[in-house]
Image 1 (cartoon, rainbow, N blue to C red):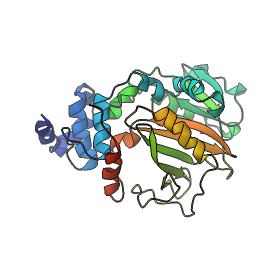
Image 2: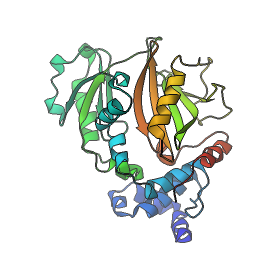
Image 3: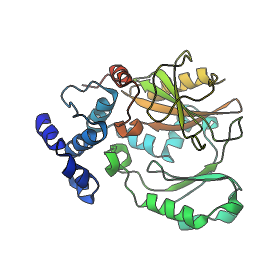
Image 4: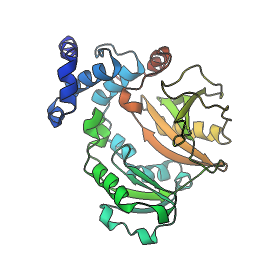
Length: 300
């Protein structure tokens, strides 16, 4: 079966065409992911013996389907889980939640806030000055996301049955006064092994990614197109607590990424992610794809 899927994946011209069409929604998950993996990664996926990090993420999409994962992926429902598991004090304050954009009363919102769709990735609008906010542009972005079932993008099944809603959170900045750094702990069956730090996301130079081990040593790996920061990022004050919480939240899960923010010495939960870059993220050098893959122990 795997050989047949890879044979179809070699037909690159029609594959690119079909992947862009709504008809692709009707393809079985395994066939769709085989085609998409070949298109994105330039190599056929080995379903029988996955070894790389990205291959194993595709395998987990198909075969590791804990119903609790849908709660983890829901940006509203996960708040209840986090509050119960580690404490409400780690949550960014919530301003409101709505089923439709028309229900939002912008007059009562603060001058700075963040709108997020609960059921996808990218349905977000950051307001730093309400007087300058183009509400119609925000409406178009949010409405587009509300109509989108993110599952069909790369068959990340936890998103499939999330109820689309909109939440509003407080706008937060760190000691720099600019956009927050994301501390993304890569966790393997309850063990955080390394931390991806994303900084300067909205700067003119683009996103920087630095990868540190548990002892905060810079690792010699990266993401193509996202170089290391020009300055050495200091170890967060709350890093030990990040590790402890990540262990709790990732226990019993083959792989999950636990994201945090540190704001003025206080730790906040960001989100839980099962498939970074949808399992199509390249590394430089490529050997890091194999190293992370070795750290994932697939369930029987």
